[in-house]
Image 1: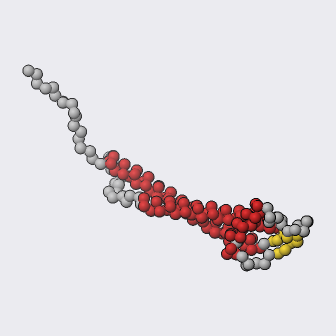
Image 2: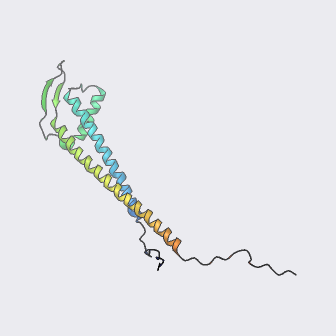
Image 3: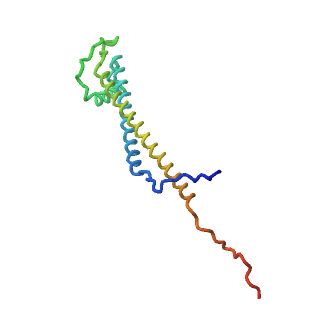
Length: 166
């Protein structure tokens, strides 16, 4: 005997996805991206300043002046942690070449913060993807429930019998 298998029973009440949570996560992700880009820009400024200090760049040129000014802002929390190491002067004897170990330390700290910000962006992205996946599944289940719901018999708009003729 072959019995027809009934269709699977779908839950009558499926929780809709939390769209407010998605908006909050999206805003947090944007903010995390801004922090990450800021930290990466700081890393570039620190690297540039480290190289200019190491090679004894002339601080009177506008670009080097800007780079040192930007380096001073980025180095504010790390200033004075380590003693700079003098490597001598440039061949013309005007500018001293310096190995600024505090800059290296700041690069490590900002790099770790950038890695943490990147991990946060990745985690937020995974949570947003999960909410989107749940929303697709919710819409799919709703479509299945609507398709399997009993429908009232359809009545024809056209008459089934001919009207009496006189």
